[in-house]
Image 1: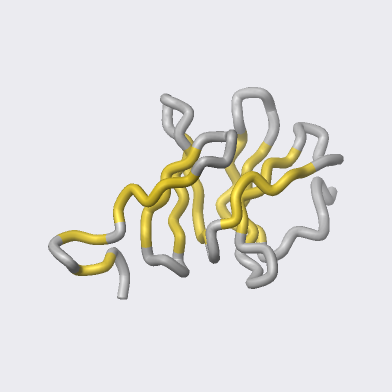
Image 2: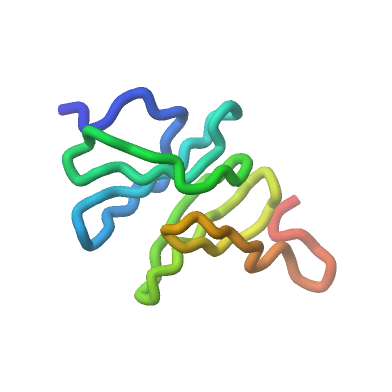
Length: 96
């Protein structure tokens, strides 16, 4: 069964409480977090971040994004406001 097609290198699927999904689209032309309806028949890009590589949602509703282009941990709400939460420690990047 194909739930949703035409995603650009999807990774990090997360199911939300309402049955909808979040995925990252890692393709260079998209580089975004995408929200997919519970039925898989509609979707919308929430935020373009560069090259997101993974997702998690915490109990407060924050969406955590592992961003590989910026080498940073991003924090986002469903409204699409994204902030860099952590980009390294003591001047060293999270990944290099």
